[in-house]
Image (cartoon, rainbow, N blue to C red; front, side, top):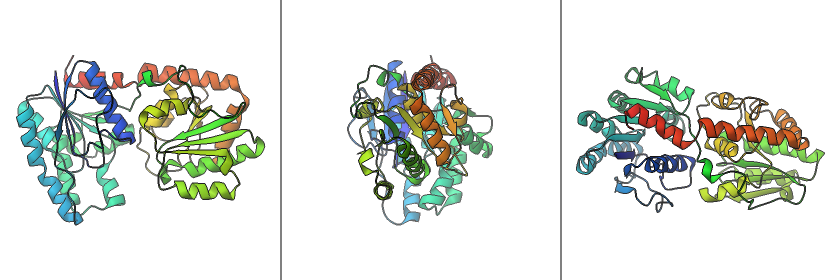
Length: 384
């Protein structure tokens, strides 16, 4: 079974440490487990192949162009010719699987021309994101690329209902959308993992994993932790990750005289995360109020696979994944007082922590492993 995996987005380093990188790596691993011969076509690799991916055949796509924005957009669009050529040289394939990127349409075009299943994974409303956060000159061109790629794809895999609803706005996507949430590799997590940063004896550790950016709401977690710590000084906050919010967070913590009760690990490799999760008593995804929440947060699936009780904001897909008081706790987004109360409840009730953590792991083992996700992909493609 020959599979072409395409990622033409320069912001997705396939072998890197970002959440999108881990997503791609785990899908590749799950495909390899099924006996696939994998060809990776990528604009950005981000380093050497991690363990378990050495057998993947690498095909480097042209690097991201530099210069003025409009010119970069046109050069990215022109790169479709090279992608089409390298696919024709490396093929034939039994499946073309592509992570949708703003200017790439050649993969799905090739798949349709070859009579091969072409599946397009869509993780976000990229046109809107680009226009709002990074700038977009040729919006009509980006929309044309999307229509062409969606039209040629056999199916579109949206990571959340919200992304699926966005896709349905495109005429070419209607009737092709399948919601396929992110997942986790449960073999990396579980009760046998030893903590790498254990707290002092008897200390209660609240944890967060992720990039320190405003939409992750870590400042809300800091406020909630301050309230918890005021009631019980034998508490600790463990923040795994790095980003632009780290410095203002540290300033805030110093102003509250909490710097000695908080540990920042900085950015870590994926293989360090399980032992850091094992160092926590509860894990949090404290998202603020967001007008659009279309994420399928990898961190939450990893928290759950580690058997941790989770507290997450009642938003989007999270409100479906977490059943309040059954496999986790839901709190109002952007409400530090309610989050602090949930943390206090978990701190004072070890039995509740065990019950929620056990149920959380059972949920992901049943419904949200990467093996389940890849089986869904193969079913859509008509493969074994």
